[in-house]
Each structure stands twice: as C-alpha cells, then as structure tokens.
Image 1 (cartoon, rainbow, N blue to C red):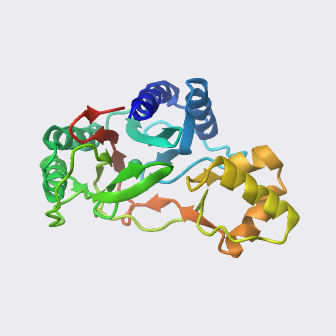
Image 2: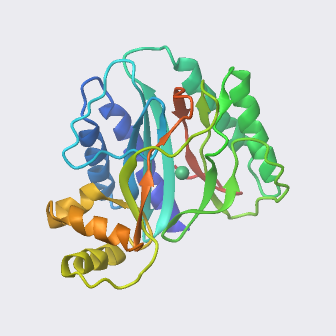
Length: 288
Ligand SMILES: [Co+2]
C-alpha cells in the first residue's frame, strides 16, 4: 500500500506542475517531457507516456519525437498522467482551457462528476451507481458523458484492469470491495458522447512476447520487456534511447504482432471534450 500512496503523491505533484506549463505557445512536446522529467525527479516512473490531448481529441495523444504542435488560445487541453512506484500505478487527469472561458461549464461538468462519484465510493456501492452519478451530473450541465470511455481498476504494472467504472448507468450490479484500487475518469462533451479510433498515436504496448530474428528489433524488444513490462510506452522514448532507426524496428515489431499501437481517440462528432481523473482506494479515499 505504501508504494500506492507514494505513487499518488508524485502523480498529484506532477499534475500540479503540469498545469503551470499549459499556456499559449507552449509546445506540447515540452509539456509532456517536462512532466515526465518531474515524475522521475520525484522518484517515480511513468506508467504511460504523458498524454496532451486537444479539443475534440478525448485521449491517447502523446507528442511525437520532434513534434512542433503548440497550444493556441482557446484550446481545451487534457493532461493525463500515470505514475508507478515499483509497479504500483496511479492515474490522474485535468483539463485546462487556455486564454478563454468558453468551455468553463464543460470543464466544471467533468470535475463535478468526478467529485460526486468520489463522494459515493465506499465498500458495497454498486458500480452502476457510480456511472449513474457521473451521467446525471454531466447531464445537469447540459452535456453528455462519453459512454465508450471508462474508469478502470489498476494493478501491479497494469493500468487498465477490472473493474470497469462506466461513465453512465450500465446496469452493473456488482459492488466495490474494500481495498480495490480504481481510477475514476468522467469525460464530458458537447458532441454525441462517443469516441472513435483516430490516427495512430505513437503509443504502444507489448502484447505478445514472441521472439524476433532481426537484431535491432530484438534489442529494442528486450529493452521494452525490461523497462516497461506490460505498461504502454511511446515512439519518442524509444527514439531517444536507440536513435531514429528505431522507427523501423517498431514497425517490424508491430507487423509481427509483438507490440500494438494505440490510436488517438476523437469524439465522433468532433465535439469539445473535457476530462477529470483521480485514483481511489475503496474505503481509504483518493490517493492523488
Ligand atoms: Co485512466
């Protein structure tokens, strides 16, 4: 348990630091790298690449190597951060609107949904009740929850495990048990309330530990197994370690079905999206 609290503390500090970096003209790459650096400085490791997702992109957008995108006025920026300490994962996210207040209510909707959900979490609460609370809170603001994104359990070196915590009443009558560790992450949108698969994100995960003959690809695969285990990693990190030619090896590993690439997740109607997330130990409270 101690490592979870440590992980949560680092996660919280990284989030607070991240907020200070989200400004007009800031490079997305700088935001991600500085937050990742901060996590290590504080004694943690990244549980996944820092995501900086803009506007109608709900999640899973991490800057590429040499990414030159910058934050512009009016952008709604979701910063999603995962930390682990000896594999104990905590997950958090916030939304910042830069230089305007057009989406203030949308951001409040996801924040308030998160707060209300956390208030009712205790041993014995039905999973559907949490979803219902999130849905009702977001709808009260006049928006829709994104129903095909959900909160999730976390475990040793795993960021998405059971139980699934829906952002709507999905009818799940299972109850939460004392000590279960879950990330709650409501997404609110002025779109339809659904995400689709977008462009490749440059974020990968190991899915099959098969051997590969190619020397460079094997070297990189060994590095991934050793360093990230089953946690997501990104092209940017691999290029930093192995140089530009690593791109080819990643392609090869992907083609062989050894690693899988995730896609960015846009809202289906290109609606604006806000997100808020914290990690909770059932019966003990929020850790980050
Ligand atoms: Co999460």
